[in-house]
Image 1 (spheres, each protein chain N blue to C red):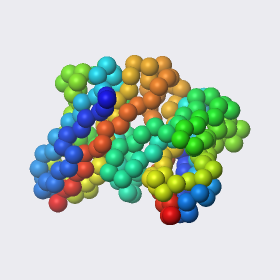
Image 2 (image 1 turned 30 degrees about the vertical axis):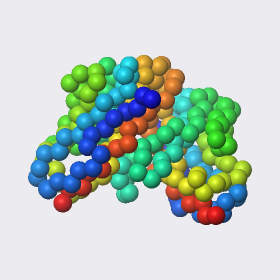
Image 3 (image 1 turned 90 degrees about the horizontal axis):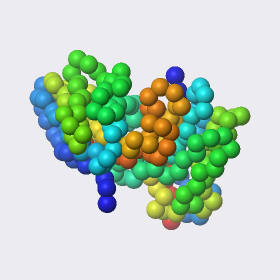
Length: 113
Length: 117
């Protein structure tokens, strides 16, 4: 079945550092890929998405490129802020069946001033 | 501002009691998901409805859990009897009709934080 693997956290960075959170997936066909963010005490919010190979999703300074050859969708940001501290989830939706959204385990990001 | 509404936000109950969690999807959305989040297991899909019909509940323990959509504006998740291992955050999410055709995204509620003692 479809699955998503994320790097384990926490990822601890200083403000203005470069961020990479790795995400790889296993799926048949042509899935859509997502990054969601969860702030403390809240539900998940869509951060960005990409629906086909080589697409780049971007939002709020975050970017991720859908790489079919490496089955990856790594999240990057050039300069993190304290307010980016949250848990980030990579997710996949298959292109067949019932279009369930399958999540990775989440990666906690802690940004210090 | 359209949002998914979940009640209760927090619930502490004793083992063996029945727990019912409710979700009001965004108006016009016809897809509803129930997820459970724990530290150990992360986000697990429990049930998935489209047009009020259950499409997939393979992730839900059938002996004690049940999920229904009595109408298009209400989804329920019931645990009877509850056990300490059910302690988790339960999220409801809804999606528009475009979700089924590959577009858009799903929107999460703020979750129901359940503690069973």
